Image 1: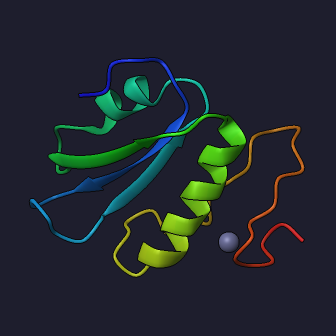
Image 2 (image 1 turned 90 degrees about the vertical axis):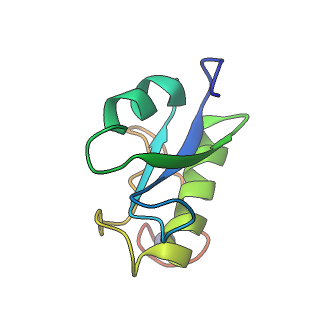
Length: 94
Ligand SMILES: [Zn+2]
């Protein structure tokens, strides 16, 4: 389980080992965000802790570009306010 308050990214699934259906990230506490989303139609999840919010953003971008065909949230990940982070896989923030 997710135990610590730490930045990270997560994928939500509707069936075990099915295609990822929702991609999320939290810059402070991934646990809190996950708890909010789980339990309605999304009953399964995978997550990854990241060391920094920027790392979480980069990871979210990678996952977005890999899985966007099956995701319900189809918008490109957004960088945190006040940052100049860029996606390394497209020119969304160029
Ligand atoms: Zn991108």
